[in-house]
Length: 136
Image (cartoon, rainbow, N blue to C red; front, side):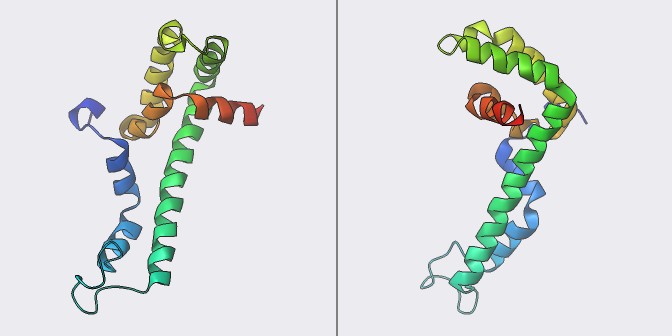
């Protein structure tokens, strides 16, 4: 299925990948006010914190994996975009538009339906710059 046939946003992608901790969070009514939740459906605060921690870990893992796949499959285009942004900190959106398009096309091929996890980095590339600097 082509990505444009089933559009994904980053929340949908993460929800699909992290469905088990999400289901546990909902089952425990961690989001509900104890006074309003049906009796016996609210888990302890400690368990809710643990489930929330699992949710964050899962979401962060999904983001790291998406970035790693882009680094593996699109490193020259990624470095070209990062270097362009660093060289044009004020005008990068216009000056680096072509580099961004090339990186986005490569990332789309590498990530397919999980592209929504990477797309925000193209709009706010500070995280990409930090990751590339750390890798150097």
